[in-house]
Image (cartoon, rainbow, N blue to C red; front, side, top):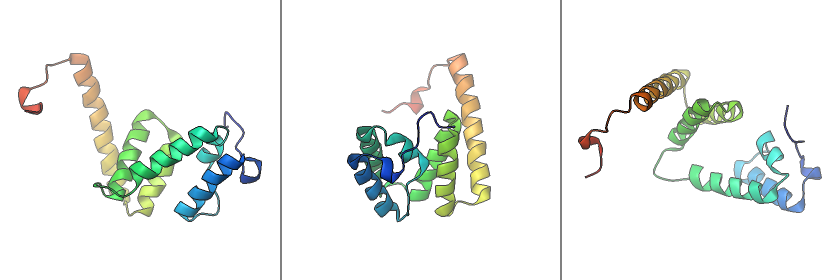
Length: 132
C-alpha cells in the first residue's frame, strides 16, 4: 500500500500534469506509472526526478541496456522492490535475456558478499588499484 494517495492526471496540479504530459510523450505511453503518481504530490520533486532520469538514462556512452541492468543491480542491492520490477521490465524490453538477468544477479550477490567482507576486514587498498 502506498504511503501517499496516488494522483491521477485529473487530480494532479497543473505543474504535475505538465510533467505527466512530458513523461507520456517521451515514453509514448497512455499513462504514467505509480512512482510518478506518488511523486506528483510535490511537483518540484516530480520535475527534478524526471529531468534527472531523462538526462542520466538517455543517450550517452553506455548502451541503454547496460544502464537498465546497472539500475536493476543497484535496485536489488538497495532492496527497492518497485525499481527492481520496473527496471527489470525496462531491461527486458531492451533485450535482456533471462540468462543475462541471472548472471547479473550472480554478480550482484558476489559483489555484495565481497564488499561486506572487505568492509569488515579493512585490508589496505593495493597501490596498483589506485589512479596514478
